[in-house]
Amino acid sequence: RATSPRSTGEVLPPRDLPRPTAEVLPARENAQPLPPPPSPSPEAGPQRRGGDGRRGRGGAMRTLEGAVVLLTGATSGIGEQLAWRLAREPLAALLLTGRRREVLQGLRRELRGAFPGLEVETFACDLGEREGASQLFQAVQAAGFRPTVLVPNAGVGYAGGFLDAGAEHYRNLIELNNRAVVDLTYAFLPGILAARERGGVLFVASTSCYAP
Image (cartoon, rainbow, N blue to C red; front, side, top):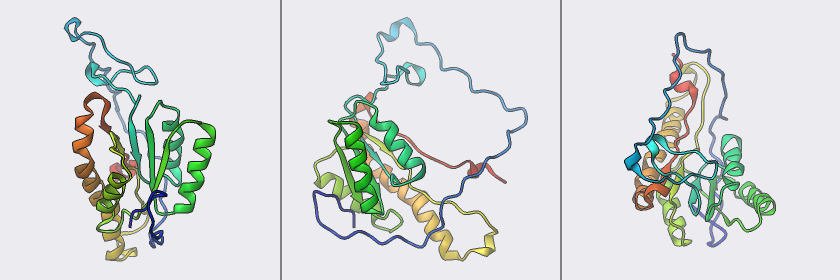
């Protein structure tokens, strides 16, 4: 079950999943840089800037000021670094999820110590379980939060031959890396769309997706 300090419940035990792996892929031949975003037309009117002063693609207004951000997989790796980076923004609240409640609570204490006044809430859940995303959504709603920005970062990786791992391993990987992302986006997207230019979804993927 998804739990937070505002509710009661047990911490879900870690599942027997492989640790994420990192790899650096060689640069693609003839790779071309992305073109710069188009300049806004004079008719577009004034634009707002985000906390780092950058504008969204096509001149769309993007800012994290007052946002309620939900970040999954926050206990280590990219997720933990994202938590620290997001804490620098003028958020209304930063919601962190992961399977290890003690680690989440430790990170919460560190963030609140470094950024006084920032509201940080934690929710222990296992998104690899079939009902994990639904339970997280219910726990977040019950705690009184309405996320406007979703960062579905939780995921696992695997390096090895296809037949070296059992079929159950791949089912677990798909549950977390694919199904949970779809379920979370479907559940939280109505609130994100209601936030208009202040809402958004940041998907996190691995470069191994492009490996042969």
